[in-house]
Image 1 (cartoon, one colour):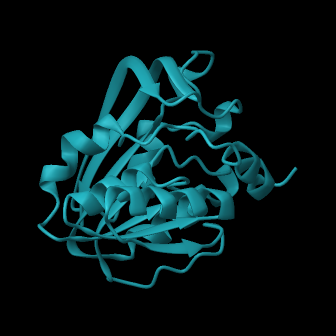
Image 2 (cartoon, rainbow, N blue to C red):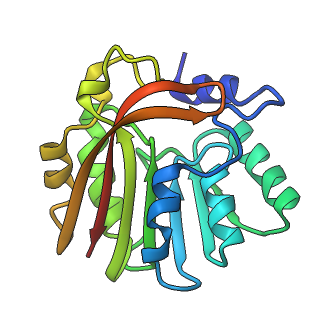
Length: 200
């Protein structure tokens, strides 16, 4: 099964796989974004984070490889009374352009190790000077915990590796969070995540 088929299957039910509320890390850091920022939200699936950002007055572009996810993202945007741009694309091939966005938001966007760094660097290049990076994802030490996430440890994050991937940031903070997730049926229970804030 391809990754596109995997995500289309996960998002095919009427229920939202990760809920409709935004990620807690994004909520905690959103105040650091410029007002009415142009925000790129790759891998947002059913749109819970991108739609929430739009309700906060930001101009949002959600990119995802799952047509099912983007369909539900559009439904959620209508329900919340906002409009967002959606792009159907695989991040392995997606070209966001250079210096076109004020912020980049990556929430639980875990990629194959062989493309992770190149995708991260391409997405970071899409930020304007002074642009903001917000990332949250499962730490390597999360392996075996019940909170969800990739089963292959090679897909999990490592603080040192993320610092290398986003070395283009003038400032970068990486915090390990040990707690419980409650984000729809697929993110439930104890988890160890890395919460990253950066500025180009």
